[in-house]
Structures are given as structure tokens and as C-alpha cells.
Image (cartoon, rainbow, N blue to C red; front, side, top):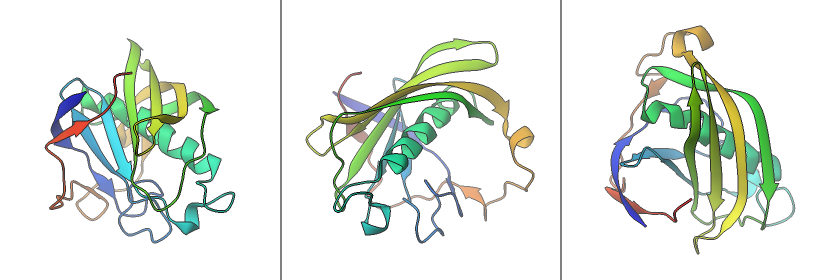
Length: 170
């Protein structure tokens, strides 16, 4: 299904998942959709492999966790989801050097926590890895002890940022 992109989320400087200055990271970009789902886009390289030619399973779990942890910001700003519990299921190997999409959505929210589910999608739209988790909702200033200025955390527009994305329904 095709959904409009309502916002691009911030990238960090040195984060392994979204850091633009981290030469070994994924440099993923995250986009909020009109239905409050979140889509991350990245292209894993050779430095991210486990078995030859395949994305390391721990890195697949990492980007799923990041996506599910970020999805809360589609409805509540200036907070982050902190992982309490995480479950991952591997369905198919994930190739390197191909664009990969990862989706996340909130399935239940209660007070200071929420439950989310996520899927890592191959180029053909099939699910390679799926997960779910429970997250504590915390204000950013309770999590980090650095100034969140434009050098550390900012939206970085790119010429190829999508205005809509084709993603399967959950």
C-alpha cells in the first residue's frame, strides 16, 4: 500500500544505525507515514555481514529495535522508546548492497510504555526478519547527557527523500 510521508526524522552524528559520521554504521534514514508507522531505509555493506554476502543477524535485530524504539516519536515528540523486552524472528537471509526497508508500528500504548512490532523487508516486499518489543517512554533529556544540538541530532534533507512510500500492510 502507498502512504504519504509526513516527516523525515533526525539523524545523529555517531549512532550506529542512523549516524551520518559513523563510517561503519548503517546511515539509515527514517520517515514517518500518515498512518503513524515508521519506515527506515538503509543499504547494508560488506562491513555489516555475518555469513558471506548476508547481513549479520545482530545488526538486523539492531535496526528493528531502533525502528520500534523510534516509532513513538510519530505521535509524541521529544521522547524516545527505551527497550524493555525484544523478540526477533528470522525468516529469510538479508542480502548486502541492496536497499532494505524496515517498518515499525505501535500496537498498544499504556501510560509510560508501549508495545511495537517491526518487519525488515527485502526488495521484493517480503519479510526477512520480524520482531516485537516493549518500550519505556522517556523524555530525551532523561536518556542522554549531551546537548542535542544540530551537530549531534538533526533532520538532514536529501535530494532522494521520498514523499510517499510503498509498503505492505502489517
